[in-house]
Length: 471
Image 1 (cartoon, rainbow, N blue to C red):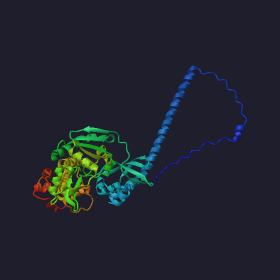
Image 2 (cartoon, rainbow, N blue to C red; image 1 turned 30 degrees about the vertical axis):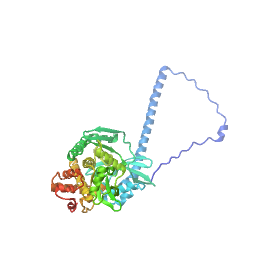
Image 3 (cartoon, helix red, strand yellow; image 1 turned 180 degrees about the horizontal axis):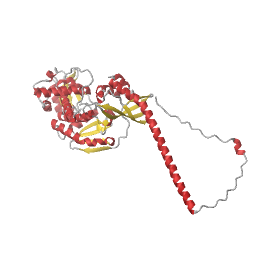
Image 4 (cartoon, rainbow, N blue to C red; image 1 turned 90 degrees about the vertical axis):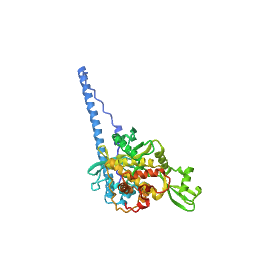
């Protein structure tokens, strides 16, 4: 319940009406006091000044002490109000209760509430769920609150910022809205331009690591130059809830192709920009992949991406710098100026993701081949990111089911981050069976993008044959 303190102020009582008619008492004559000497007057002034100074110090100390008491009391009350919500959040994670987790979220923000529930399995990986969290600090602003929560991961204490919102006298988890993050700062590396807020100033020390990671991915996947990542780290609410291993956001843009009167085809374009279909050469290419169709006017694209996502895809593919945005580590967890290990893994994996997308470019093929290829590429990025960061993403705490590589890739494209480890295992199988450069050979074959044949034939197999593998 929202709490408040009421103050009652009362004016002093008026004098009785009869007081105005009482006779005045004659004033006594003042006593005859000799004038001050110069020394006495100087001493009196010094005494008065020193006492005035002491009085002012006393007033200031009283105000400061009173403010401190009120601040401590306010923080104590605020923490007591927020702590039950945070405790229930962790209970839901520990008990694998996604329904409770959903109920704690802002009921007026349905999209974010659904996303929170969707990311529930991967969110459980961030904490040691057998140790309860603690609310350390609360910043209130109207019906919004920014809460600093302390929790434990692998035996070490981390703190992150959680936003809550008061709705109908109840506090709910909400998108990040509070916080004075300061001006944006920029640092230039050879492979990474780092942009961050003053509140995240400690990230400047991590630029050499970011640069080294980007260099490793650029050398491995050899995208069209220049290979340079424009990385912005922001307290962006649309980047929450954080999901380790998600890769670059949003997922690769996807276009399917339909035929009037026949419906969907199996032809898709990964990394589409929304402009390919207007290219006469691309239209001729598509007709070659659609047997029996010789009129491009019978074909139309069905895009599975927003206009903003398509614009971002074009920037990553063709501009001098590949834009990438990642949520501030303060919204995930920081310990003594060190980000949460899974945030670092996500950082490296996101860099690898945008680099491999640039290396692949728009890729059009049948959906089984296209999605299987994406599963292999994302799995390879995951393996390399774990090597570079020294952090391995544990399997999600849920029952695993057998799934084909093309299903893995399709679900990743649709934003299902729970498929990340399945993609990693697929890439590992290709590496173990066909050599460490197996995925690079697939990438080279895909760059030709002639749409003829199965790119997996370069490994002596097919996407359909690999569909029988269990992941």
